[in-house]
Length: 151
Length: 90
Image 1 (cartoon, rainbow over the protein chains, first blue to last red):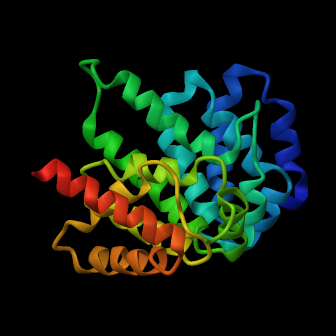
Image 2: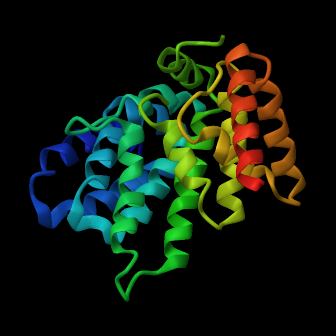
Image 3: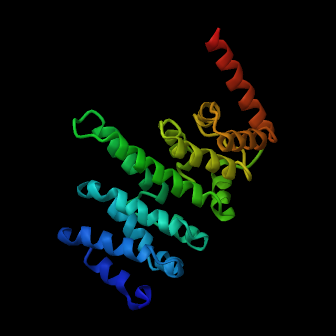
């Protein structure tokens, strides 16, 4: 079944306000991100924005790795890069959302249950996502817009 | 990639994990192909991650240095950073 054509993402967006469903939504998005053929359509239907929104949720830090894996899966398809970069939520752009897990980990660093290996894995996933995105010329152009070009 | 990509990569370059640093080096190389990167902390992070025996990382860092120094702004920034480091080392 082509899940992206059956309005699953729109249905998931509709139930995003119900906290009890958020973990299930994240798992559904992860499953969808595993299909290479539908990744472009996934982000065009705002699947990336849903992931960014979940990543920003302070109550879902325990499944941040799952969300980052979903984003990493999506970023593995260059066709989805431009739409993925346009995913934003609550004034935070895509890159700023990727910074959220790092900031959360820094805040928890002094807590006894802080897991350094877990943090390493999270950092690695974020670096991998940025590396994948940096391979697309369109994404690099956005950096040149910001930095003002060469000198 | 605007609004913080290079700053986030600079932050990730501080991690101990070699795989993370390898991805950061590759990202720096890709991004520096089209534009001179002038974000705060970028050059310092690049010099730090280039200090390794991992061949692939050294190559990507060297290519980034090459891309960076092909611009006037990059050469100036590079010169400043190197002289600051020399002063600190003395």
